[in-house]
Amino acid sequence: MKRTKIALLLQATAPANEILAKGWVRTKRDAKGFSFIELNDGSCLSNLQVLANENLPNYDEVRKLTTGSSVSVSGRLVASQGSGQKWEVQATEIQIIGLAPESFPLQKKRHSDEFLRTIAHLRPRTNKYSAAFRIRSELSFAIHQFFHERGFRYIHTPILTASDCEGAGEMFRVTTLPPSGGKIEEDFFGVEANLTVSGQLEGEMLALSLGDVYTFGPTFRAENSNTRRHAAEFWMIEPEMAFCDLQENMSTAEDLIQYLARHTMEHCAEDLNLFAKFVDKELMARLEVLAKAEFMRLPYKEAVSILEKSRHPFEYAVGYGLDLQSEHERYLTEAHFKKPVIVFDYPKTIKPFYMRLNDDDQTVAGMDVLVAGIGEIIGGSQREERYDILLKRMEQMGLSKEKYWWYLESRQYGSVPHSGFGLGFERLIMLVTGINNIRDVIPFPRTPKNIEF
RNA sequence: UCCCCGAUAGCUCAAUCGGCAGAGCGGGUGGCUGUUAACCACUAGGUUACAGGUUCAAGUCCUGUUCGGGGAGCCA
Image (cartoon, rainbow, N blue to C red; front, side, top):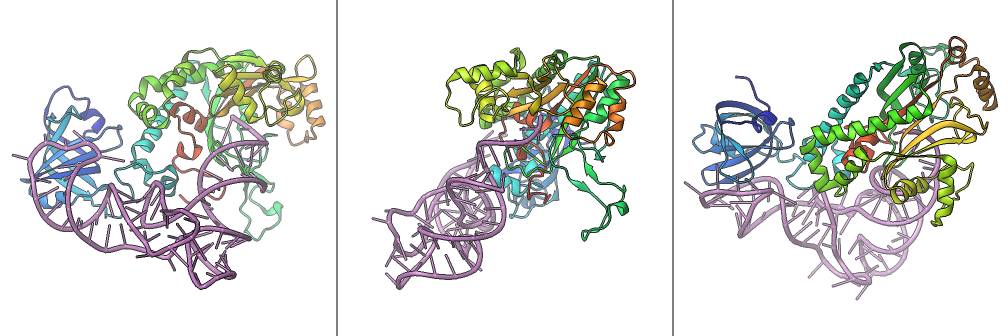
């Protein structure tokens, strides 16, 4: 007999005489002559209540079942007499697949996130983490759906690379040389190679041929960042669009985030409800704002002006030409506008070489999308498509034009205005679940000094 | 990397002025005809992160180390 997933069983519209369910025991409650087993198979948040009666041939064994054990249950799906659930299974046979000893660390009580991180191999068996990872899966799908509906092509840019996307942070070296060292000429590629910090430069090449493209893949940053918003390995969505200016770029970013917020509310209601109840009381209100409210767009100059006029006692100075600090971003999105804010047209001195120079010769067409609680969730720009200006900017910033020859060449053969951005996938999941630490939205997080699992 | 805070039973925490190491949950045993973080009784469980120091006496005070958390920077 084929097993039915618990998500499906719980949606039943009529009783069933014979069903087969398999899963892990979340908890067991014993009474005289029978036991209740809460069975979970990860297909949904809810457990299936299994009634095990003493007339089961192996009831003695069933009675000894522990939290975490895996079982196979055959029986009848019937309306539950109890009040907590619509359906339950009256077991006719229970096979114990794997008995968990009493050392199984997950208990039927709340554990701290810090403790669960030390057992990352088992934490997906908890309600909160299984819900987070189901939402992660659903959002991955929704991202592909969003772009597919709009005629974007999904492309794969290299993980191993010799170029560094200027300004994107420290890189992990990739080498086959022994730890004791050796000559770079003898290394696998014969030149210094690294893990990618962004697929943008390669993505631009595909946009300048396929039109609208996006990548969705892992990204690596060797920054020694110890914060709840940074990981050394994370997933990033990077659309790149030909014949697209900064305003259209911002619209795509806004559409994408709103689409994903709505998709989560529509398709992950049960899991979302757990976060709204236990993790972040304001989650649903925030998602409503996110899904509906038009994002506030304002030039960097105006953002600075608002901050200067606010008379808010900031710890760091506010002024034209200075980068916005976390506290400034938080003020704009959490206190002043109370919705997502897109800041654009930054001074060229604080942004990388590839951002398009504006007519004022002082600012570049870059933009950051800022959201409450997380800060920067998207960073993007219209790219500099004019060969002479791009070359000049690279020279000013001390970049080798030999190394970027292919990037420059794309501006010599039919160059067109184009734009793109990077969306941090883990930060997105933090945004829609209310989980406040990036280590808890990716199954096996990599952060400084943490790569055990 | 910098600043602040923390580490006590398997987990979550308590321990007053430096004076006998505690509770709940979880585990084990027994009980209970429908439970819902079930309930009731009994029970086992400790190198107080590690290494030094001060003291008659250190979980508690001091120094160092390790690990963890929050904030900052870098960014997504």
